[in-house]
Image (cartoon, rainbow, N blue to C red; front, side):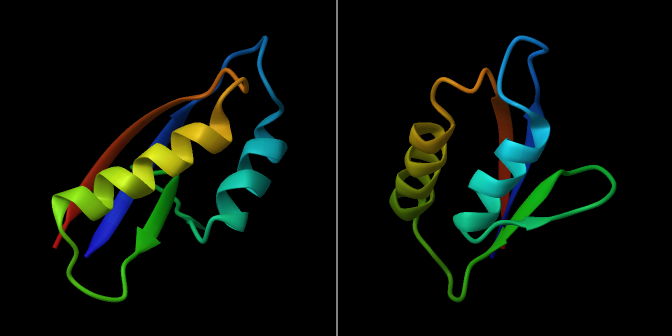
Length: 74
């Protein structure tokens, strides 16, 4: 399974390079093309596990001005 994340940056928010650092520290990998980052799960996960991970991402990005769009596929 993979979770893809797209980031919308605010000109008044945190630098793009800092947001990259935050997400990289969480295990997300940069992706070129349609999505900005991808998280590769090591196993099939439940909706609850995906939501818990996304809650962590949002918590880490709080105050940065970043807005995320995500999708998870198996």
